[in-house]
Image (tube, rainbow, N blue to C red; front, top):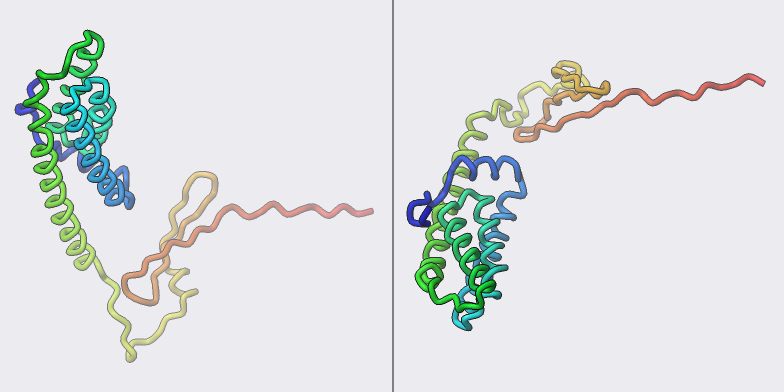
Length: 195
């Protein structure tokens, strides 16, 4: 498959990666941006030096990282550079046939990152709207009667997990805070021996 035929971003894999990484997603996407820039610079420098062996590692790194985020076109392009560079090392040839691919690498990376950034901005706005819509706890009002936290805990639904661990959802005294209480099995009491 030619890299031009590959889709720029596979959104299913992107969403899967985002859900698996959770709160670390933005941090790791930032690492991908930094590492991608370094890998592309290393690939360009190795190509200028006609050093096929120096092309392999950064191309392999870029292939794996871009595949993790669903950036298929970039991944296919980096894989092609890696495979041709490995063949050139084995046959002791120069990597001259990679000129078009190396030139296309940086624009492909720039286009991919712009698309991922737009998707991230869009999803964070949608998440903020969803949180605002789902907020059912009214802001504190001085005229509203205060309810003791113990009463709220007693009214909260409980969820049973394996091993006897119980999680109770606690209604917070102020908006936007939704902690979870964790209570586990009772500790075993020591038996006292009579002497």
